[in-house]
Amino acid sequence: MTVANVRDHGAVGDGVSDDHAAVTAAITAADVAGGGTVFFPSGVYAVSAPLGIADPGISRVCLLGDGDRAATILATGNFAPLTGSWTQSRIENLMIDAGGHGGPGMIVDLDKSYVRHCWVRNWSGHGISLNPTRVGLLNWVDDTFVEQCDGTGVHTTYRFYDSWIVNNNIGSTGPNLSVESGPVRILANHLNGSPRFNIELRGNKSLTIIGNICEGARREAIAYTMPSWLESDSPQVQIVGNNITNSGKESPGEYPAIGVYSRDAAHRTSGFNITGNYFACTDDDAGWAYAVVAEHVDTVAITGNQWDNRGFTVAPVKVNGTNVSVAGNTSGNDGRVVDTLDASTRLTATSGDHVYFLADGAAITLPAAAANTCRYTVKNLGASGCRIAAPSGNSINRSTAISLAPGESVEILSDGTNWWTV
Image 1 (cartoon, helix red, strand yellow):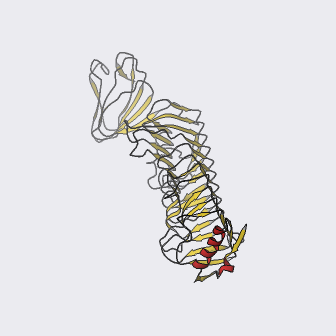
Image 2 (cartoon, one colour):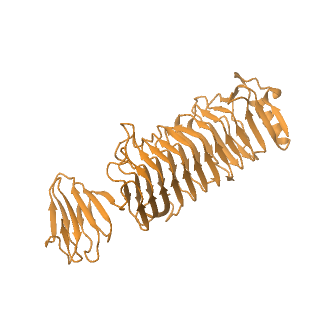
Image 3 (cartoon, rainbow, N blue to C red):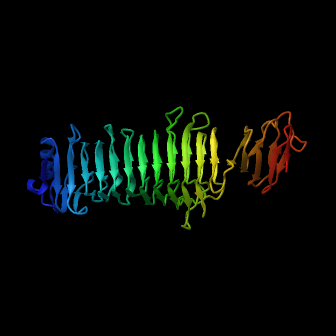
């Protein structure tokens, strides 16, 4: 196949001369020939406009840098140095430098293509934006370093699917990875810097998240939020064998390490396996309220995880849902539900261990006592007394209600007929 050396097409590579026309000529020569390699000898190739062709795109072309990322493509203005549509192509062993002008590093539509062993730096907004306009599958983003900058490290749309994001090191201030697609395999990445999230999931299907190091997130390390336009969702997400550390830095003790959030109680998501992960914090400014929170989420397995060293401050797990298994973890295997209430609330559960913290203005009405095996622990965090009432036809300590003084706590059990404090 054709080997087009960009120097043979007039590129200088001195970091000053505009090499856009020469590099574009080399890419076009390889593309017109039915495929080939565009070779970049060591140097800095300044470009005055993005490289790449959006329509009809480029096929069977490999952009290959010399040495160990010794060739740089440098943007001289506010644009992504590399763009376009790439089919059965490779972008390999290159330094992609947005120049600090405010532009992204790469905006590319990939189809059966690779971004491999590259280094993306001096970008803003997105380090790598994948498939914003065209559908593509069977793609790899592999062994690439997205240097810490302001924005999202790697961003995918739903058009990027049946693909792999593996073995990368990604820093950012926004999410390290923001993924809206599937099936996608997210494997063995080091996600760090000071991101809002290490992995942000925005609507997915058949997602596998295995063996990643997730550290330094300001909020959740991994956060799935059900899209607002869905009535229900079943994304089939596996979160397995990840090392999750030193998150929650924006407000220690407020966020969980992993958060799974449905729209609300009426619009629910289901299908999450959270297994074999390690949660711990060694930084003084890090820590989580919970290791895992799943709000209005059904069909959830939380098993075989280890959480210690400020892995949680309130409880290991907070799950509201059906068909939930919490077992085999280092602690918190009883499926305990922990929640803070700030308004009058009627409880409905018939089983489980429940802990409620009551803020000012909160009150509780218990569910029916018959056939109810719940154990309620209630603590008043407010500055005034709060009320716990029995439902109609039941009593609590032979009264219709009891009051908790500020700071007071109580445990409540049913004898099958009425409620009693213990």
